Image 1 (cartoon, helix red, strand yellow):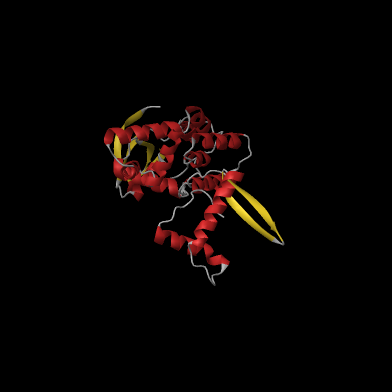
Image 2 (cartoon, rainbow, N blue to C red):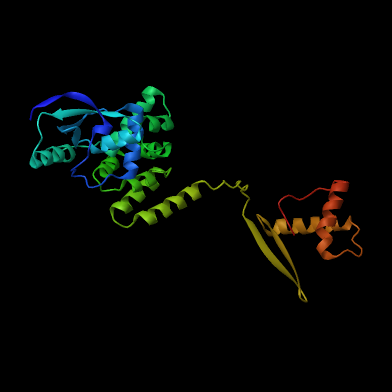
Length: 288
């Protein structure tokens, strides 16, 4: 089909008629308009003249987005004749069916390469490409955390992109692999995956508790004294010899303290106070 050179066609002359694409998605058009506002229309539309009007055959999305971006005209190749309905369908199907979009992993690697070579932030890249927001770019880049084999599964549609980006946010490689295995086995639908990832992140972000000093194992023995009386001794390395030593030390310390009228429950505090005052030797490791 013979064509003419690319011309700049005023949007006011364009009259949209048939299109195999039944409707334009608002979110996609907003993103495309942002891209056109930043970078212009990189590929010309195709149309034909019908009286004073120009009827587009290819490029309906670009024309709509250009108008949204405030452009007055779009580049267009004008066919040398009015195409038949069959010719229009052939052109539109060829344009849309033969297109091969970048895979998710290819897009992520290209964006990462762009950021490294330009020094741009994710926010600046999103503005330049019209890709929604900084968060959109950041989520896409998280795919690069996953192994190449997993990226291939995402590209093939075996793992949804939303599930993959959620998994990629898990710090532990082992945890990520377990989640991937469960998704592939069909045991972890999207809603449960999100809850699991949140649980893992909360667990990993809990403030670490100070470690307690490791103490020697303590033993406990209760010695009956008859007539309902008993004494309990607790301490490490408990044996008969240490038991005798601790009891003798306790009796000796009590003799140096005025305990007249004191309650038994206050004995520990009295002994500690007296020990500080007179500098009595303290037997380390034992509590009676």
